[in-house]
Image (cartoon, rainbow, N blue to C red; front, side, top):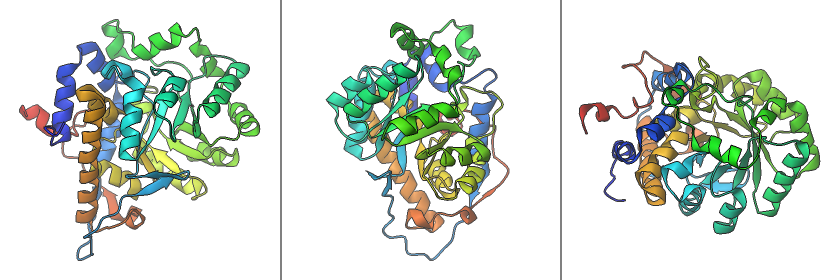
Length: 359
């Protein structure tokens, strides 16, 4: 995959490889897709305030999350339909994440299932569960995940019901993740029953770090910490759930203040480039989750393309840090960024402006 020298080329290849239905599923969002556009608009509105004459000859990007070393502060998030983008599905992502030295969070709507992925690629991994059964069903899944070697467990809390994704409905497109859930005999309706009591039950019964994904308000972040949640995950599901939601990077500072460094914070929502990652770290994120980035790369060429995308992303991160005048992740602070007027209308592809010019 060395022929890919830019992320733009990877996205272009993904578009060429996917059907319209699968491409729209990857790039689309809920209803009017305002949340998706706002995620990108907010990321593009935060600009750097670079400092000069700092020694940046050896930029360091290594970090850790719950004791798991990360080569770069990026994690591969749960995508239920990743097997649509490449037949290797969750195994391909697992192999790329392990080889590159980052963390994968595997979706319960992904194929192969979580036990097969763990058997194929042993190592640190987080399992993300959609509740499609009762409490006893959930307990059984968690016990099996722990037995399979998963080192973290994630509840997605912003998916009480499945949103109306009009781009898909117009084509009568049913995403693979929905077909997997139905095929396994579950009911998505159990998601509506999830509550703080669910969190308390998991923390009381199981000895496994708990991520809660979908936090967008400081009050919820504070309650997560008080409930014993181990990682707070700022997310609006990439704009795919609640339409007209705040941008995740704009919600991040208040969450950081509420958490007060008591637990790590992960953030997602429109992050597609190395500069985006650095902005998220400046505003207090301990790690950045990149869903569509993962989908584009897998669609462009599976594991090998994802590895190449990560190499390019790391180069973008280190270049951005050096030009901003910082050498370590600890040097990244809120004072390094400020809000400014964006230069162009934001969209899911505005991170790749040269696509519109025919490159």
